[in-house]
Image (cartoon, rainbow over all chains, first blue to last red; front, side, top):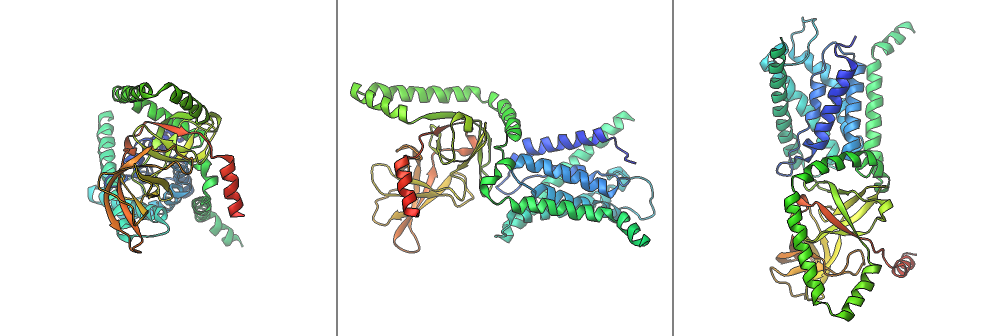
Length: 173
Length: 270
């Protein structure tokens, strides 16, 4: 059923987790902004995947990050929640009458739709992530700053990643 | 019945979602007990190994600077040694044999969060125990919070729960250094007695009262003084002596608190 081989998905998961834990987690611009680029994996889940598959992959990814970031359950909770909404978000930006398999991207969805999809997806995840992380909730304005600017940074990183994967894909074909 | 089963099978992902989300939230809110956190922090040996590997690569690029800093410290210690008289030498040797110092490498470190932690590459098997003081040649770093077998997590000055007993160098006025979050170079002593004489630029050092730290380890310099709201004490703003974000090596002060003092404190609690 799965359009991407299991080993390849596992490799993506390990690579993204390593990138996040070893480098991105240490970025903290102005004391607020940390990119959570690992959700790129969830953003790229194609429309042929089963929903249980999506949820399981996202949960494992989140749990792996938690294990290495001293944040038990935090990434797992926010990634699983995002995985629950990911198929719906794709449908929101893609015309209803399409039945082919879609890997969310510039070309498959169209530029405007893809940007909208990524922005909404990132905002959803980061809002949940930072709310859970800041419990007990203190300063709402700081929380909002963290969500908005971290989302922006993650979003930019994901656009760059999409550009790179598009141009490398063109070389092969 | 049949349609109910169909419904459950078709929406099994919803149940999976509820299961996974509950599991995550239990992990998130069930691990509040700090002492049980060791597994999920970088004191567990798996992430310890990973961070150690990263640090190994990173340290390679700073070797020249690190060497210079070590040479400078060596020179400073030597000059101190030459000043000692023979009788002092005997004293010092005796003191040193009872106060062990363990050098450790910093393998993970945050400064920008509300509660920061440092991970070092020495643990229980190297003789490190929770509560021991940690400092660098530049100044006080914090105290050991958790120990794994090979790694330990340190609660640095830059953590809301840290409180370090310190005084103005050359005077006996003391208070507790705390960090309010935000700027990783500035902390505050909020309960300095009102009659103490504090000037901008004065050096703050440890008191050695608690025997967590030796006496006179640098903490920082006074950056500002104001009266606290209750009027009885002074609030002293301190520019920290160390830059925790650039910390590579630390010393752990491994003399455990005197058993006698500990016993007395226990009696008070009872």
